[in-house]
Amino acid sequence: MTTAPERPPLTATANNQGVDAAVAAARRVIAALLHAGDSTAAEMAEVADRLNAVADHVEDHAPPREARMVDMWAGEGVTRHDPVTGPENAIAPPLPLAGREDGAIEGTATLGMPYQGPPGFVHGGISALLLDHTLGVANHWAGPSGMTAELTIRYHQPTPLFEPLTVTGRQVSVDGRKIRSFGTISAGGRLCVSADGLFIAKHLSRPR
Amino acid sequence: MTTAPERPPLTATANNQGVDAAVAAARRVIAALLHAGDSTAAEMAEVADRLNAVADHVEDHAPPREARMVDMWAGEGVTRHDPVTGPENAIAPPLPLAGREDGAIEGTATLGMPYQGPPGFVHGGISALLLDHTLGVANHWAGPSGMTAELTIRYHQPTPLFEPLTVTGRQVSVDGRKIRSFGTISAGGRLCVSADGLFIAKHLSRPR
Image (cartoon, rainbow over all chains, first blue to last red; front, side, top):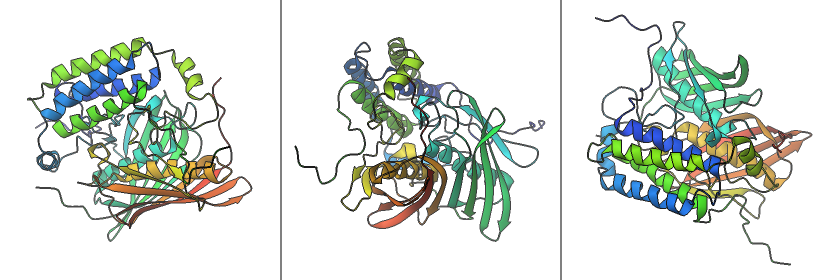
């Protein structure tokens, strides 16, 4: 028997090998392409050829979509493929989330250029993406969870790129099948974005 | 003088060469890695090496961040780097948007596994991302535009992956600096998600 950690991780942890390492490298590629822009110096036609060759190779070794869907949804644990926390999804920043003693959850991520909205700031829709997912995980942590029915996002001030952001979520109330949750994104102690979510306690069936 | 097209594009069009072609290939890599999962057959350590080599090469040829920020925000035209429509951003599906005669805007995209929330369906936060951006572009198309102050997303039914989605947006009212907009995501004529946005008519300064 081991001692429970103070803040148990609620999301999958990247293991820096296998597909996780390849996905981490793909994130570097995404950011590098945005930083380079339409640079002739980088010989983008050759870069495209190299990336298409990698895609061809990986596609050739991928299982059929249906089999993969069953596999990725096997078990009851945390997902490894989602676009917010997933170590297997290069779109995910990723945002690791852990449980706090007060029943809320919290995570930190620094977002780069791929997540830009206004010049130098995080896209409002990316903030909504992070918060929707965080509220869902907060519900799992606190008790009953479900699917988003309504999400209200309030933008208090622009959310900076290239700085550590703290994302929090907590379940506020459960009334029958209606679950209400609240979350925030802050930077350097300043509140940037908040979210109120209404969730309905139901889950879609997992493929088998 | 030329005749205006019926549905003028309001977003950047990928030109299938230069960085756009490399980004399109990076999108294939992102999806292929998710489809493959932790496959030993695909020799992911070698895949990681190849992707890191591409990232190294492109990073070596990228301008300093500040210079790139000035460049990407030059002019007053549509952006090429945003995470929804940008041909230079591998995170973007991308969603091309065009103006309709009735003053609304519309676009179509089919989302794959990187955008998954519940099994087989689009992540609710991804729907929020697409709608936030679409409302912003709808404001540009209709008249005054600005920054999101509040966004309310309603989830009517799950939004399917692997099927064409129609995304619409329109400006509803302008009252001083307050701009209200409405948008939808539908699949096969069925309404999946709707959004009400409140925007404030201001813009952050572009880097120079």
